[in-house]
Length: 381
Length: 111
Image (cartoon, rainbow over all chains, first blue to last red; front, side, top):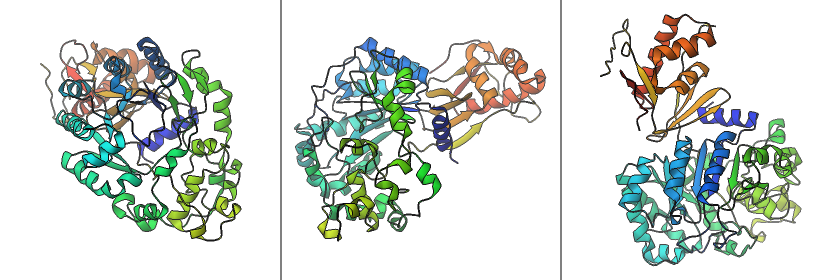
């Protein structure tokens, strides 16, 4: 068992929220066409309120802290927030578009020992990237920011969100990342807006395009393994948890609302009114999310894909039932294996072409490439 | 100045050693064990209960011998010299990984 798996298991067994994603603002200096946020939002916590929230998260045992937005660097107090988070010994990952990163910002992030910076790049061509971000010149500024971060020794991941408008540029972005020395991830995830507006889903790439992605060994590794038929459902699968949301992971909005995940906007409490640990342990919403096992899922509990599907409970909830199927993931399982899901059969699937196939996510990589190195002394008992 | 001696039968660190935690790491205790991740190379470490006691006491102002005598020996019922040798080995390893600093004088934690 890897060390990160071991940590996740311990956190799960003890009910510890190992990871939290904190959006410090929904304001942004870009207007990306696929963004799921309403940038006006409900307001933001003050600096003192965010520090209080960070105190609460540390006391609850949170280790991995992702700071994001909106564009987090739009807040003038962002470095004060990061410095405070680091003083509490969080592992800090920052998600930014890097437009506001200049020499001073890059140096400061290095000084604060931010572990990783993730930056979205949609294309290596300004016309395409700027067309998606709606900000002329944004690609140049983003690339300049990435180069500065790399020059200061920070670990940078370029996240390439794939949609119809940039489908042909994935290879170009990958080559750009290679040239800069950044990690590269491809993600065809397009989700409904947090307010439930699903018009963004029209940006998703087609099923044929997704099939091409799923059979590209440079993206998925071993294609035969990735596209293999699902294993038979066993007791462990039926008793298993759908995902880490609400079990070892949570989300905090700029206004302090606590959700199971950024993609699962079910309000469980607010850290401005109630201690995070209290919300985490006692909110009825978290209890409900945690009560769900594979065997409790409607339709999915009889689906052959149950053990291998990337079903997102947040997307299922946004479809109307947190115990129900996440249609996008059903369709993805089908595209991957060419085996219809229980949900498809229930909906009257007869052949692949008759079913309107969209998709959602690629399996995400491990939290980070941690290597095991167990340091200990042996006390004589 | 800290002197590091690497011969097998000699102490690994200076006779009086002060240990301080690096600022370039993230750390959190989970079930009595300390998780540590290096911001430099994202390597993840886990310290067992005894090593966690040393980590928590590594304030740069308390000598390693005092830490072993006052934190480790009472907790683990081990003789001082045996525990100190183990602790020397531990802090030497952690220092070589850049997540702990060693000094021959009391100091504040370095970044």
